[in-house]
Length: 169
Image (cartoon, rainbow, N blue to C red):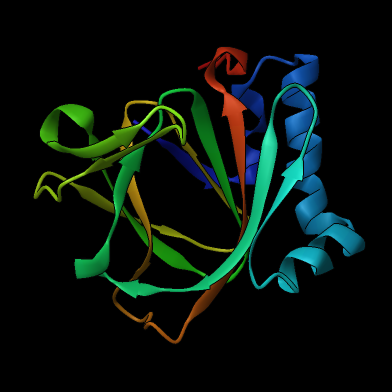
């Protein structure tokens, strides 16, 4: 299942490969480097930023949506590292086996699922990282509890080829 926590507290989970160190440095820079942080805060929609080692970041901002509009997805090739830079959102998450595939695209590295009642909910706030592996069905950008569709989130989603991710638990 997905890993969720403060960016600094999750650093110990990864082997110190060049690729993972590069990823961690980029994620740190979204919070600490004034130029990159401001670039994300000025983003309208999304911008694709190429990184090393076949990774890329999608720096984005969007208004939250009501839970009945959730899009449940997972990916074949990439692991999602989603870092909230500013704002908050809720996610639904579940196991692939509890969902029925609605559509899939190898070209877009995207599998879209029909909603399922077998989900858990978690909260993503500033400086929180959510790591979604290829078997994690997730739906983000949700307005629940105190959040409404007027709330906006600014974040970076780094797409990392799954063969580069070596978890050390």
